[in-house]
Amino acid sequence: MDRVEWESLPAPVRDLAQEHLGTIVKVEPIREGRRSALAALAHTKTGRAFLKAAPVDDTRAAAQLTREASLAPHLTALAPALLCDIKQAGWRLLGFEHVQGHRATYAPGSPDLPAVLETIAVLDQLAVPDEVELMWFESRWSTYAPAPRELVHLAGGTLLHTDLNPGNVLIGPHRATLVDWGMASRGAAFVNPADLVVNLIACGHTPRDAETTVADLHAWRDSDPEVIDFYARTVASTWLQALWSYTHPWARAVVAAAQRWALYRQELR
Image 1 (spheres, rainbow, N blue to C red):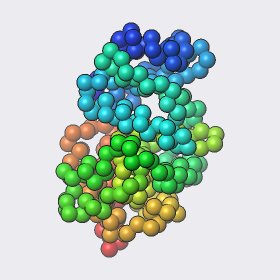
Image 2 (image 1 turned 180 degrees about the horizontal axis):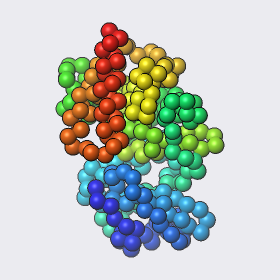
Image 3 (image 1 turned 90 degrees about the vertical axis):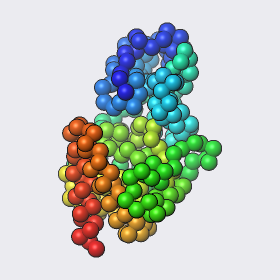
């Protein structure tokens, strides 16, 4: 999605944001990510807030903002607090608390990993009411699964973040905070640690060491190895298709990681 500047938003949207957050004295655009038309850090007279906004007629972007807003009250132990939710002049804007911390480092031996694992453990136990509308994870994979009859293995009621790249994990003094919940889904519990495995491999871990890192998480320990094999194959084939569409270095790193993981799982058999 093409990005817009703060000043390009309709004046009623900007005015309402300041009513909720306080007088905004400076706005710094954030270039990473492309799911929202606006992603920015707003500086007010009393603090800072992270802003995301998109036109309501952009169906996908609007759905992602709706998902994040609906989830926010249930994520107090995991994610930044939602400060405002504005629908005005054909736009929707969310304002989140600014989290002090640095982006997680997933490299082997990183001191950030214990905090990341603690947060994933909390996520795997978090109950979200049925009325919160989330995507069903197995439905998202229905186009890609090499064996559609096995999609049932991806089904479940666990809250899944589905984008656990290190840029979406902020390490603060007391915990790791997960941001960007726009693609959150419900599905099988093993998916959160499995997705972390792929990201760890992309950041330099061997497949064996990546799996060892998540081995104590209940959602991983209690999973069926054959189901993980299926997921590894599915992720590898899907990311290989994506290679033709995405040229970003991180996307290429994840493609390579997914392939390595699938081959490793095959060798274990």
